[in-house]
Image 1: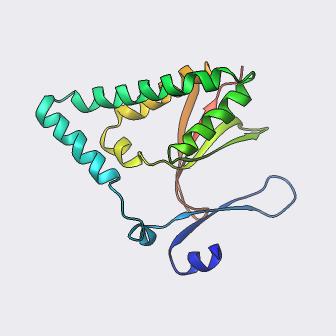
Image 2: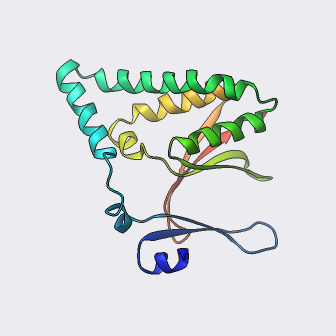
Length: 172
């Protein structure tokens, strides 16, 4: 079914080449053509509210609101993540919590590149484009939750699929 929807333009296919023997991993996500089938007050609504906050309460108001959002998320997730015993377990719990917020995330390990959370979709990407300071706010929240340094990398799309974000987790 997914392949048929891909051929009709409703799904985008992401192939992740295998480093070991076996078939490549294939993931799907909604293509722009499918968005019309799922109307929502999403990014445009959020961006409009943030711009109105700027007009009503000053130039720093959107960033203050976004900072509060990430602090609230950190407070909500803190206990769940702290119950995990290892960094890998904590990152796995974090990826799961992010999934519930609408992200398409997974933990991954490679001998050459190390341990990371890969993100193929985030509902706030449009907000990050309009308010780049919020990228650092999210990153700092993740570092606080995991208790380690994280490097955020944007991996451009191409033949392998759309762009994704990798959060390289310092394990030492």
